[in-house]
Image (tube, rainbow, N blue to C red; front, side, top):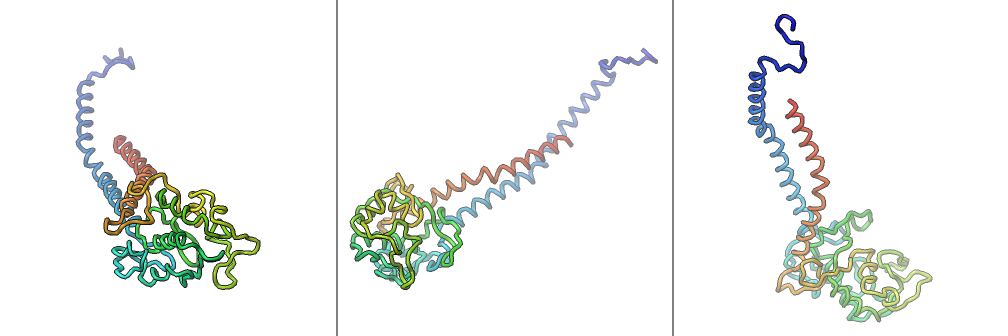
Length: 286
């Protein structure tokens, strides 16, 4: 004891009650101020959520690929030809393109199905339908990828093709002939159209594509992926559908667009949450 003051460091100050009251008052004031401090960041996060969701819908739904013969935007095409008519209410292809797709040697790409003799009609109709889907469908957005090719800037990759469509394609083509297992590349174009390259042999489709998956996935460098889902499930793209019943691929595109959005959110949100945590800690410290 010196001049009536304790030197004990553990002794409680005489005005401890007053200090505690002041601390409680400041803490209460800070709590009152916290919602106002949080408001700008919460508004920003809400804005980011709406922007990202809107961008996803715009980018992935009802869009056309940036490719050689695709329209810039989908729209009605009342005069689409034959097998392409299911897309006439909303198409990425023109009537002229749809007519060319039905020719044995189309001027669109100078590609012929008959590189190993005449392709059987039952088989050819699947290739026509494949081309109609490729050129006309506005429902392939979730699978569009950028590519660096002279004739197109985008392609689709791993589109989940309904198992019945793939199976019937393979069944109807297994006895037709071809000389290659990948039709995307490797052709002899010296004549102006695709010819079998030197050293290749014309064999049945079944020899080059022993299973439905081998055909649907290997033919166009994995443009398609054989789905385990059936037609009408809402989880796989149908190459064939009755337009009078609507386009089932619209629902499929929406489902996978939402799935892609959900996958992308954790990576986008993580920095925002970190920022939020840092700002909260600074506010609490202040």
